[in-house]
Length: 139
Image (cartoon, rainbow, N blue to C red; front, side):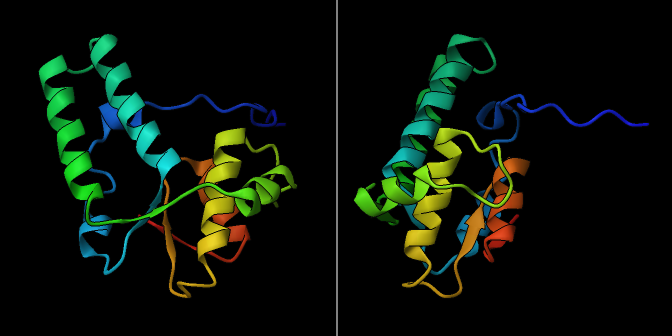
């Protein structure tokens, strides 16, 4: 009998190990919507990568600059009471970490405005929940 998967998945360092994983879907998108939370997480991942030796400080700063430049062309979603209230409620496939719940709640808040919305997610937990909520997932 196969043991069940762990209740808590390890958090991969996507910014350091696969920096271009989301580049193609972003470049191909007509509209990109990102929450402030997403941008903070990306910059924090780059800082972590530099401080743990996964990349150089110079390279991390270059990537932060590139991220900020790209983000200037994106629509930004501010977290509001609607997002916070949705994040507090259960998701189809629990457990869901707090930051993941906020990301999923942001996608649900934007969906009425963008019916062809696709979620760019790299963690299996977010991808499975987005699909269960009826959202397309990339890559």
